[in-house]
Image (spheres, protein in one colour):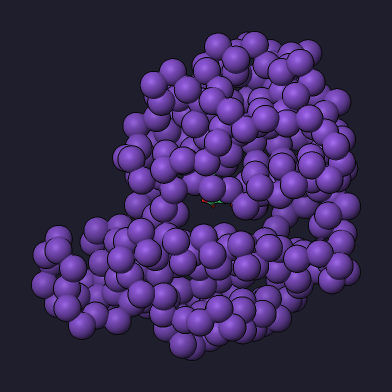
Length: 293
Ligand code: PDD
């Protein structure tokens, strides 16, 4: 089955999608990206993702190459053209990347008159691994070695890659990042901690990515009257948590049941995770039927 991608205005087989080696994304990691899930062919929280894309582009001083309507058209085309590759549920995730484009000379400062490179793909979202619901995942804590502008969804992910690999080396699925004694987020996820039955997550700041899934979980908590707080989370609170979850567009809500090889709470996915996951599942059903964005 053909994997059709979008590159600079055209839809083409992935094997035929090529960019020049002078692309600043390749040479400098000079670009931003987004990941948008779609359930039953319908995009989840498209306007939120497009707003975050705009703020990432503003953050790197790059003009948005497409209007919101044009982006939506690209995504819908990709979902449709890759429909056969998705399972019967037709759950796919859109990945999009914008770089500053190819420049004739390798110079750190911005080149003049370059055309950004725009690339997007649609890939099936695999069904949730049942092992996660029964056993959860292991995570490790690591010092956050990233820069100060982590609210920009930059393609420059070397620090995240290295930290995730350090987690993988210890058979853990995520690294939870600590900066100045506070838990910030995961290497590719946001983090929730449950203490005394209250969901806690760090307030948004320049030091973390403002996760769309994070916001949705908080919205579901409000709607269902579940207690939550946006507050600083010292490392000690993390170690003393009843439950820990990570959230992201591709992984949704995942219970962390082992932290640095010690059990989290009872060492199994917790009761509040079960409740929130059910609310999230209902939300996805509403997205599928066109009753939620
Ligand atoms: N990552 N924090 C970081 C550092 C992330 O990379 C991500 C997502 C999140 C969660 O954001 P959202 O809920 O909007 O997906 C938080 C994506 C999925 C990735 O890099 O593939």
